[in-house]
Image (tube, rainbow, N blue to C red; front, side, top):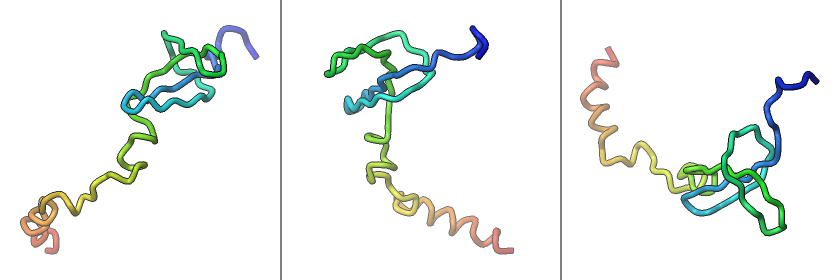
Length: 85
């Protein structure tokens, strides 16, 4: 491999700020902070706003579009007739 052209690929700890869920994986993500893990390793820290542990789609708390207070039904009533022509 050529020197100086490849990104810094290393183990990084990702931290979900909404529920403090953390996981370690290899990444090129730029980081400025580090974190000390329970096993004694000190890894670069990348903070996330949401992850699969807190995202509504993955946790099953996402609302269906059809259950949004009749807005979809109002749209279908208003524009459904013109779309059929």
